[in-house]
Image (tube, rainbow, N blue to C red; front, side):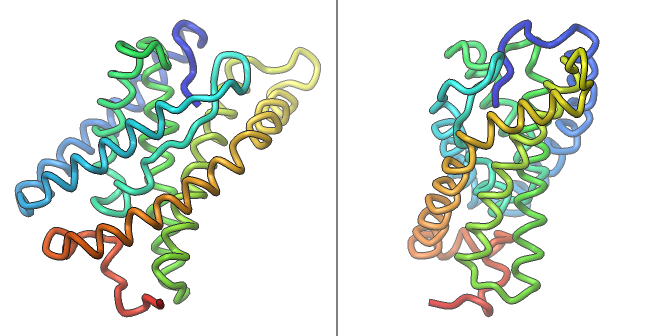
Length: 226
């Protein structure tokens, strides 16, 4: 999903950077407030950041100018809320661009918006909806992580289609081409990420009893089934 360095037209790169900067400012305030209220969760926050960094670094060739990989942002969104994952995603994407040549500095804003804004907010919304419908925690976590991952790639497809519309079919034809190619590689990856996230959440529930109490993902413990 990382759009590579210099691939977007300058106007698009600047536009996405401006939009993402607004979410980043709000996310920093949310993260600072959460850690001020629950300082004991700092280590758990580091676990969520490391999870996102490692999974999103596992890139596979996909479409021109981008790639396929898990995102790992669903876990943090369920533990700390979606806004707190924006600064985490910013740090992850910046380090990957500078140290791994994965993504780019000029495309950082577009990549932040797809992976650190859309992905976490969709994952959090799906989890809340699934929990409200009475689904078990594991099923809700799986759906949240899986659909959050796919939403990230749908956004990247839109970004690429907007920047590079088909000469004949326009943006719709370009979107169908980008999304179609992503679907072949991303659907199995998203399912795998959903299953892995369920395993990690269950492990956290088992070994971090005190730190987990304030996490959104454990607020529906009464609906959990084994």
